[in-house]
Figure 1 (cartoon, helix red, strand yellow):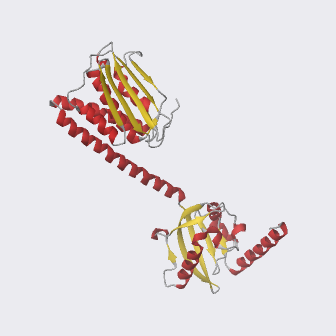
Figure 2 (cartoon, one colour):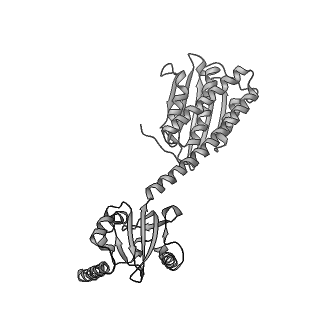
Figure 3 (cartoon, helix red, strand yellow):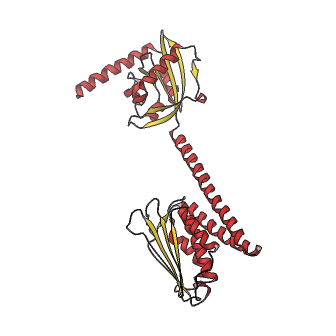
Length: 351
């Protein structure tokens, strides 16, 4: 549109606004009062032309009153709702329904800002007959931020419920298996306390990281901290990797079992024993965390005669997430090769 056409269009609209002011009782005092109202107030005539647009409406929609007055209400409504809006207005003006619908009656609608962004609004509709014409007045309140916050709360609540169910399933499995394998009440209590402590530490880390990107190195260091008398006893090698919530819980239980067994029977039970843990994410697809746990210089190792609870817990914890653990029992020390799919892909963590 040329500048001349723009000036002609603006002039016609300005004339239309002046005509509206004379047709309807929206004087300066009335406009001044409306400017103090925090909610948007706008009115349209029977053709859908905007004849009233207060300051709050300007802030909500991003238009100035000069840009809107005399123009179609369609500019403030998403295109897909234009026809339905016209039908609703005709029905509202011609029916015997109350002349006012309040915000508390579920009249939530979508509007469109000048930049094209859609917003959620609560609306109060009212109608009057002035000079033989139906005038519809709408009081609108932008509730986009509140709706976003509500959706976020619902998402968090659903996520917490989901994670709680998963955690309780793990707890139930641990209690059942520990009870079947415990040789005494004391043994049962100590085993449960250690395993629950591992879950608790991991959940604390998950909360601190908002249930994302839990450091694998942090899980390792947390489980091995009681046994690190000096830096030479335990060696950790690998780039830090971020784990999702369920993967972190599974690995925490696995690491706890390995560390507990090493402290009771393996390399961490003697001053000469050594432990190395190496991990990497191979370039294969899908991405996997590949962990190698290797003990040496500890007591002489012999393969177990039966599958113990620790081995069963490790297999179950990883198996649920598509992971595997292969143990080896060389005379020099226990080894364990762990592979766990990274559902969200590898996420290196910076220090």
